[in-house]
Figure 1: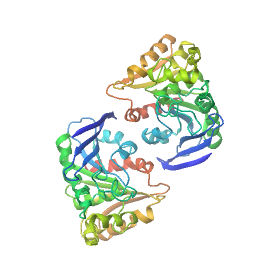
Figure 2 (figure 1 turned 135 degrees about the vertical axis):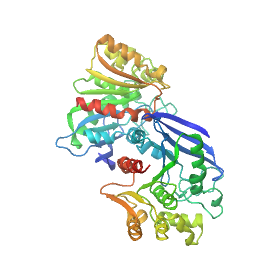
Figure 3 (figure 1 turned 135 degrees about the horizontal axis):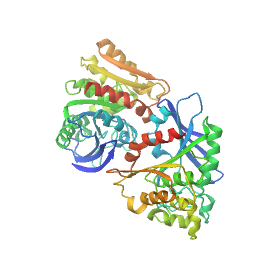
Figure 4 (figure 1 turned 120 degrees about the vertical axis):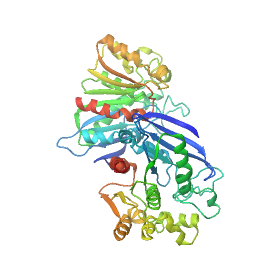
Length: 275
Length: 275
């Protein structure tokens, strides 16, 4: 593992690291914030970013360090896809390929060689973090934004023993049917839609998967609300399943990091109370 | 004045605006954060950015909105230089021209046509802000980083009636003699160094200018500490002049926005107590 940068911040250390991944078959970069040393190793909170982002966007604009330092939480920010010369991509398509891994394991050639973000994060990157940092892997939470909100919901709902807390900013709650994800799902997973359900939060809940309690914040002025996000689909699925969802709609807020950073504090406190 | 973007954030509105400047003879962009509406218009705190930056860097990475909203302070972030096709520049030189206006009024051709950041901020942009936003221009403070710390010190020391508070992150305290500014000063102001003293904080204090009290934060691991920043020169000038300076050296901190954002809260409270 190579150290790209380490910066003191808010009493902790914000690092950026790179390593060769056996699962995505390319070099992967991630950011990790370690809070000030405490009496016990900190819990680990995974932040999954949205389309077009890499590890750095939320690191720069998310405003998580002040409170993560205060609460004593380590924050890991993975990249959103494999990248590199040998990774098949559609350079002009921001909804597929680089920056658009959708946190799934692709099954269709040529994408199945590299696009394995689900396994990469849950297995390889998890092991790497556990080996290289003094953190408590028995206490993990996951949250994310937009495509990363989708990733956080799917990971938590499929792995409720692994994650103790889950939240999302403006998540894609039903990517199987959303404008900006359904064509990517077809390319990554093939045309057989039954297999897509393993990466769709609403479908997973319909299929019997459960998570104790989820916090979702959504801006009412988000331009992707109707076409891509549709939190009411998650609300209905949770209601039908008797699953606890705290869905908050915020008038005037959009899809940007100005929205995320405003509610970051609430999310960190939400996770801290369960970790 | 054209609205480029407006985003709700922390109960206020972060805007980005563009206008044609008569002083810099080009289009200028600036960011302005308005806190939540209060009973009285908020004071105005100017943030001046460093080399290579524009209005957006601190807007994205400075983490000022949460507390500015709480304290009720408007934050204006101007660009760091004129820009555009008709503005003379040295494209490969990050210490001169675009992104490196040094908050002075150039006197040497061809730069004197556009590079008038001192007058632009103190006159034209001040008037524009006063006309277009509900803010209290009788309560103004100024702070900044690196080159912008230089700008903040010079503006406050030269205009103590105008600014009620001043602080800086890692400022260039004596740009006349610093590696990264002296050659720019020669191009902007000519070879007669007596004229440079009007834009040099240490020289201004030596020449009898005063400001009631200044806060300066400096990272001890800042790679520009010895060659460009040298806060001890400001410390000596203030001591000799009997001027109050709160200079804090922070072990392990560098020149980055991770440093700025860590101490942003202290600076906002510093200004708030005087505004």
